[in-house]
Length: 94
Image (cartoon, rainbow, N blue to C red; front, side, top):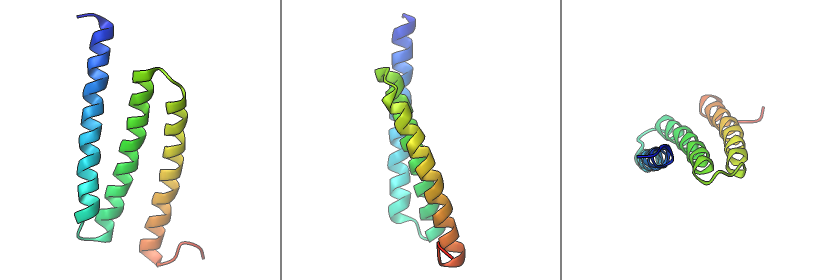
């Protein structure tokens, strides 16, 4: 087995694991009994989306995916902070 084939197999295995994680997070997002569970599931879902973009960038050899992953990370962080503040205080902008 060559190195390129092994790397391809590892990337596709990681893609499958990330997609499985996204499905489980979406399930927790839909079923979660509390708002905190849903926020945690949404936080994990955007991290999985960022990982998916990174893995697609590795698989296709394109830098556009890495830039998209950076934007997803920044927007996900800001949205998580806003949701946490909303759950604690009931308002986002004071």
